[in-house]
Amino acid sequence: MTISLSQFDNITEKLAFLEARLSDPAVLGNQTEYRQVAKEHSHLKRLHDGYQRFRKILSDIEENKDFLKGEDDEEFKELARLEIAELTEQAARVEQELLLMLLPKDPKDDKNIFLEIRAGTGGDEAALFVSDLFRMYSRYAEMQGWKVEVMGSNPTGIGGFKEIIALISGEKVYSKLKFESGVHRVQRVPNTETQGRIHTSAVTVAVIPEAEEVDLVVEPGDLKFDVFRSSGPGGQSVNTTDSAVRVTHLPTGLVVTCQDEKSQHKNKAKALKVLMARLLDKMQQDRHDKISEDRKTQVGSGDRSERIRTYNFPQGRVTDHRIGLTLYKLDQVMLGNVEDLIIPLLTHHQTEMLRQVQ
Image (tube, rainbow, N blue to C red; front, top):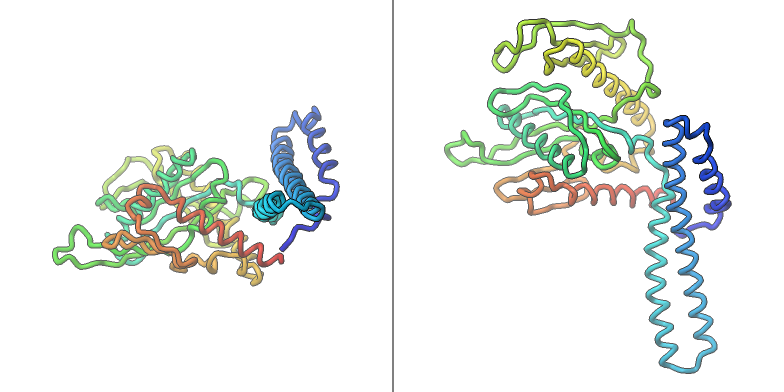
């Protein structure tokens, strides 16, 4: 695919218009609008600068071609040919960068996320792997400068979790982690295994964009609240007040429980935040399922019941089944170094999108 010049019509005028808006007192006084304009300006500036660089490279190629036509010295002609070859490679790289910038943006890419990890088949071993995966994502978040806040958890008492839900906030969290949803399979020898047999367990990961007030409106009458006494693993009492909160969205039947905080008010706020995100996610999933063409731009089917990755501890191997990628650096991955998995997934997704628009 090649870039169409019409895609850059009036780009200089558009950039000047946005720069003027950034100086407008009305925009400066509205932080939400200012952030939107600044974001659009930043994107258009990168596009403008990239296109100017692309045009300069194409101009240099034409100058060298004209030089070849009128030059008799073979040594100078060879230098011109080498420069043409190098400039042609540069043009291809810059064109690819521009094409990626022209792709439609996922409006959710800049959102914070709720990371939900739940134990599947495998009993205690699956619950322990929930803890391992949460630690892995938490360390990756720390490397990215993101904030992790646990919204709710169901510990097993042996260091694992039946489920854990966390809010991860920061710059472009969803854009990096959106392909982590699905079934993560682990193969390893449990500490309790006396004969050295490898056990296979499964954990489900869901990455849900945080809902904002403008995204979703819920009628108060659609919500039912229940309060009860918090309890820890094995029924051990966490406190002696009815601080735990269960909120049910009556039209859909979605239920969220939060008991991590000692304050009923804080548990209610957290539960509502998770519920709103799940409701918005459900609406978007339903819409997504109705548009089958969207499947072509996904990494895998997008189904959270799909097995996406296997972590094989005896072999030190991690395999992403959607793109056929295998890395023999499982120890590093579990320490939070998951960029070598995330970047190839993003690249694959972008390649698929480019193929769709050709």
